Image 1: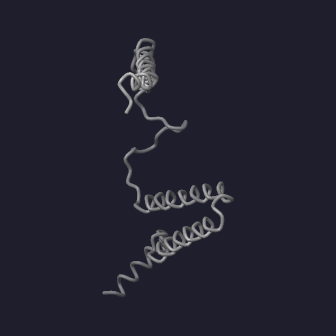
Image 2: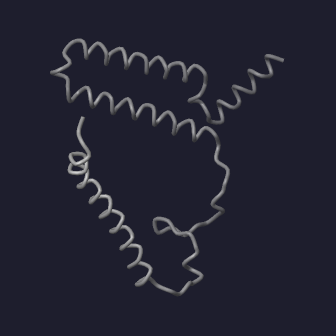
Length: 139
């Protein structure tokens, strides 16, 4: 077990780094406060994004289907990350890695087919009419 002198000797660079990081952040905030503008104008408080002036309220309602598409994108984007990681190590993992990747893709395709069959990917006007028709036939 290392003694206190060895621990102190090995940890001083980390402590120094922490002090430098905090000092740099504090210094940047202080310089910004001292040199920054003091006046407050009406145009400063107005939202502005990508060179486009706002046309409506910022808190508008968004359909839940947009969130579903975002979640599906994240899921299948992660699939691409895993496939890329596999592709970089294809020689090392051999046939076992190939079969594991094949199983991974089959599971993801099964999930996509499930979402498709549940209607999670249908959210246009025709899908709403179809759901309304199905509800009316159930009653």
